[in-house]
Image 1 (cartoon, rainbow, N blue to C red):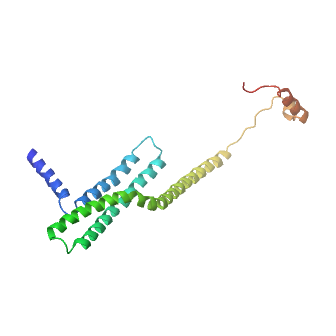
Image 2 (image 1 turned 135 degrees about the horizontal axis):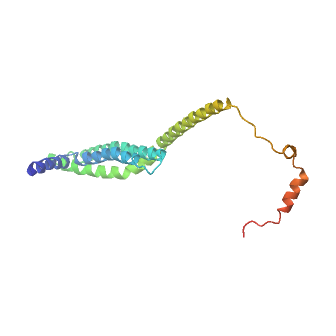
Length: 194
């Protein structure tokens, strides 16, 4: 049983390790897994607010969506360049080795280029996503305000009782300007703080 597991693991390693597309298959597989699991784990974080989680998860997904075609493009371009240069000067076996090596170099260069490409492509997409989030928040706020307004309308149908006035003379007496002046003058000597 253990030998069969080793054989299947060996088969997987041989599949990913042999052939012209070995580096491309591995890097795109890793990018696909990162595109699935990183946003999922970000959304599962209970310590962050929902808007921040959605923004971060979408940004992580977008990064990997940009990464996969970038890996493929750089792999194909590097192989095309090397076969163009060495096509007539090497044997078929050597050309295969050159393609494998150039594919690996292309994937490595793509890994360096992906952050720069993301810096160009992500800002407009993330701005549109932020506007979408804000419009949803505004719509939700309008729904809440409409619900609150209907509650106020329902409350206005109830009878409002006026408070009883115990001293009618004090209630009708307005403060004169002199009363206000004397109150402020008497409290002007008070110190606040140390």
